[in-house]
Length: 310
Ligand code: MEV
Image 1 (spheres, rainbow, N blue to C red):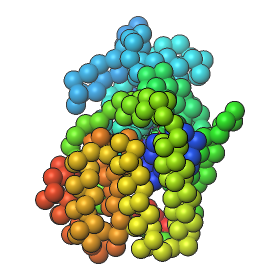
Image 2: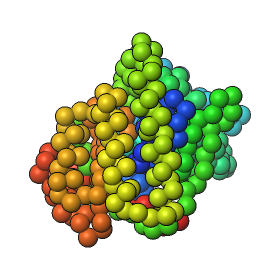
Image 3: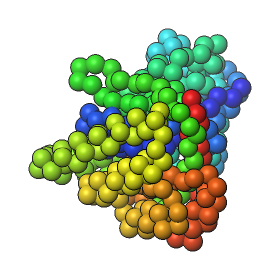
């Protein structure tokens, strides 16, 4: 049996989303984390294996995946199964494309499927979030939400309430070129560093977060009332705010500049930053040209992806 979850891309609003502002994220269905489940011999317990990484986890280890497996089995009210789970993923690790959240969502689904259950996206998302919170500091919850819902979403944390999660209306299909800097980046480290600076002197950071929130709100409107040039410039403006927040990197900036110099309508880093991926918004006929330029500017891998009309 197979279960899976897609990679994700944050279109706009990363980091500010941790502080209560809205953000927009979309799944990338072309990249998937997949788990294959096989019943194993009695009393062998749960063994989770990632052959591509040469790693194996058991249920009682102190590791994020073991913690998530324990939480899921508790939620399902089921004892440890005798089950071998094999993880394969085409989502690059530590790249801002949601690899950890997707593996987590696929794991929750695999354990549920083993007892004949299918969990709804909200439950999958909540289990992955609780586990991420234990190991990754102060995540907003957007990553687990978009990979569990598998559709473009508007996401905003709210005090004392569950986050606001709304599927997005998209009036026209939009084309993006995504490029990986090849620099691995830890979301926990970047989010933690920004939080430390925010704790020391909040006001200038709050100003950037508020500005990003208004950019995101305008971008949402442009998804249903298309204006490609404005959308492009707002994405680039979002990138500049992220630069000022200290979460971009020379490699990301170089790729953003190269995309714009080669005809992209706008470009920005995507995800936590300091490495990982950036996205360029392009007219579809220019996608290949921009992807080639990004390769020449140092990207180790590029993808062309679309936010489909919904
Ligand atoms: C990471 O994909 C997005 C961040 O905003 C962190 C988070 O929301 O948890 C940087």
